[in-house]
Figure 1: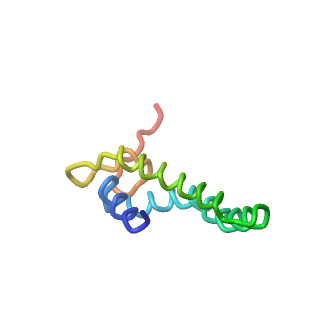
Figure 2 (figure 1 turned 60 degrees about the vertical axis):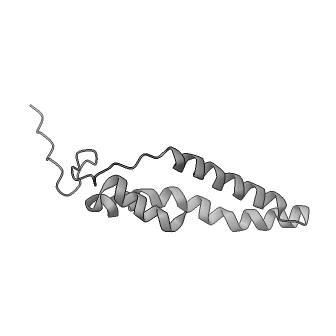
Figure 3 (figure 1 turned 60 degrees about the horizontal axis):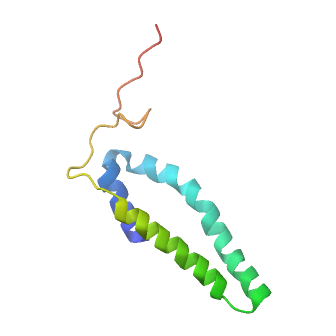
Length: 97
């Protein structure tokens, strides 16, 4: 999943938006990455096996795969940045009248 992540971001949002999109996605992944190992340790300490932790992790991966299957990658690389306010190359906001 992770090697494909960068490729999908580039294909869906374009190379010019790559850094911004990656930067916005990273804080959303951080809690999952930080809590995964302590959760697995807690499950092992509590139940003496990693079965529950592995089941939870596999369920999360299966959910991610289902969501990924619904992703529609555009035929051409996006070039307009109008969907990301303040991005380099995006049209400037109009001043209030």
